Length: 67
Image (cartoon, rainbow, N blue to C red; front, side, top):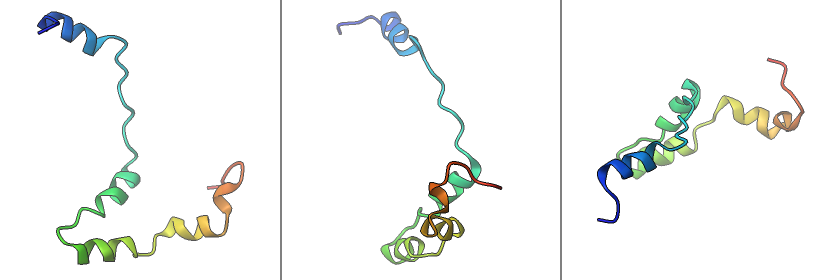
């Protein structure tokens, strides 16, 4: 009980920065790991991703990508 409710709200809102929206493809990728058992999670972890080939070919280390 150090701060009043008004002061707590002021602290919370001081220099508040809204987080950017997560790209849909990243959200979809992260959600692919929402499994209910270890078997499903293991399958998702070892599933081949399209971007993985680019990473393994070191194409993601270039200054820019031609899309």
